[in-house]
Length: 285
Length: 347
Image 1 (cartoon, chains in turn brown, red):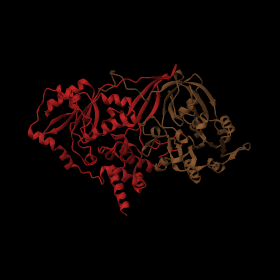
Image 2 (spheres, helix red, strand yellow; image 1 turned 30 degrees about the horizontal axis):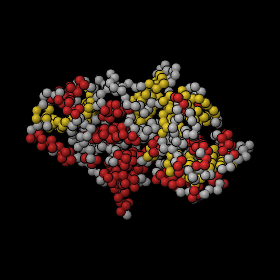
Image 3 (tube, rainbow over the protein chains, first blue to last red; image 1 turned 60 degrees about the horizontal axis):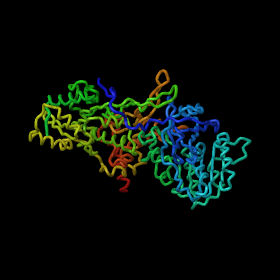
Image 4 (tube, each protein chain N blue to C red; image 1 turned 90 degrees about the vertical axis):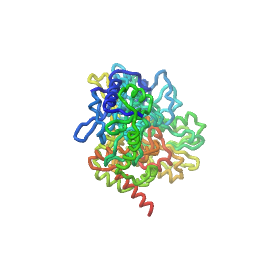
């Protein structure tokens, strides 16, 4: 039998599946299950991402996983990922130390519409690890504060020990232009903050529905439905809300089929979709 | 136009074999055929209903290394081996249409070129051959029966010989090396021209809707009980997607060599019909119900990709219906949903 791929002839076109090697420059535990990994591209080149975009991160031998960039584009020379230990690749990412190499492809996807947020009140709804991509939005707003009006952040986690970026949240709370509320579902006796799922925070903030744009990532699909219901109650229209959706993107370039929702590819057309788009898609949430 | 007799065809295949590996239909069982890499022109089956697996393996193999990597001493991505030219011989018009659809999906969709696919495809020579439909074929319903685009040469059987259409410069230079041929005669010319009518006359398929109507009619039937009824028969085995000439979904995983210092990142066919396909980290499955997976197959072919590509992402080869373990017929389901939607709308 004669098969192809024997003798070489010519070179392949640019390999969209080949990651660029980058270096881990800092790791920091964010919680018992989440770790911040700061990564530097060769020559400290900027990643050039928009808030809400993701990268495909490789640890050779373990595989590749899509992970949202959690740092703001305003941060130069490196970028950060908040990695939850859930599978083989994320487990391997938790083993990395400074100076270790990691493969990066991307950034991919559309990102949050910062232009729509500009000049308006920004309501950020972050459930659990959903705060990671939204931290990129928040820090972009804080880096160009006068471009935006009020910043309202609602963050909910299951337990107090799951809260991410606790120190930064405290710093956000210090600025009087920001309102930052955190709630937990399962409080310990020491917890003195809000208790309940994230939707219980909505009545606690005073929202100007006509001038507010919402950005949200809230975890399991059922939470999206509850959040949308609460936002409707506040008078927020579908065209004023943007949600980042989770799917298992294998390729990041619209080929592999894994992240298809109705007629859209999350990796190319998303991961951020407007409320208007989401209500049209059967399989979104 | 020229005609190749047995000797001329043999010569054409021998020339092709000399230039590059040739993938061609060969007989495997009593009535089963496969595209295989041949060594001898005599192996080729010139008349066959359909192969069990489509010829897409030529450009999108079931397993393929996207990347080689080094893990130790320092991680690095290494180039994969270059792809060599190849020839696909004896491809039917439906499968040729499927190659054109894959060209769009792998080379143009979202403006991204898949490097491996593109390297194989651009270096390939394709020689098509005409056929007549059996009971599973519905090429005449989806408009792929007369496909020539994508082929370099195309053969139409006439009285044991073959009329040759030369479609590209690549085809021109290949056929120029063949010495045993003659000019077409008037009778042969008319037999050649009547071939498409013969296909139409012999076809038994029937589609209840015009192709342009399918996306809207199916969309309206999103909540139809037909999906549930079809799912009740389906085993979620993934055979339909495995034999499909236009399915291109894949999974990617790393494999380490035994010393664990180097390895490959490999893609392999995946199937939206398998339970794990839409599973995400944390355990949620966006198509955990079989009904959702079944519907997704029809919607992807006749709604989603149809709207993006401009025509159904199905070429009517009939493989999925013939191979289905549960005897689920793609066209029958399509027609049921279309008919039901029409009745609902009429009410």
